[in-house]
Amino acid sequence: MDILTVATILKPQGIRGELKVKVYLDSAEELKSITQVYISGERYAVLNVRGSGDFAYVSLRGVADRNAAELLRGKDMEALREDCPPLPEGKYYIGDLEGCRVLTRTGEEIGVVTSVTNARTDIFTLSTPKGEVSFAAADGVITDVDIQNKTITVDKKRYKEVSV
Image (cartoon, rainbow, N blue to C red):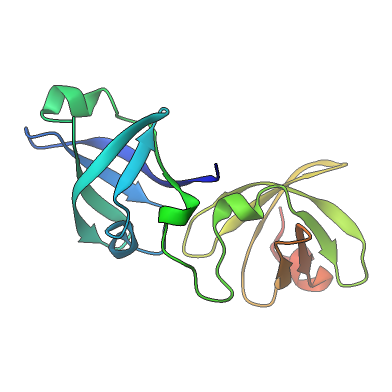
């Protein structure tokens, strides 16, 4: 079973159990196509989603009041991959990028992706022989992504300009 994190619950919204969430899909609009989610392994039917951009308000079956919603604060909202909207070419789910080896165009291995922080320009964190390194996925840094072979190719010069 392939599960992806689609949002994090920020807080209860109102008194009827609605949840304010930070969306990890391209927009809250994409969250509207998901009919069921998992929180801490428990399945919930999605009743309603409203919002746009990075944040949404979600109503779930079984979360009827503010007290029930408060118990979910800070937890990840996950969905089955097959329930998530298909991605356009050149877009990837964060879960697919984690664990990829990062290589230069000449094949030199830099490290392995341990996390990706969703931002205007995504921030990749790598585990390298010299410790943890982060870089922004700015224009021209990433030249190829091969999910099948779990590799990400970067332009070494651009990578050095944006890595810390």
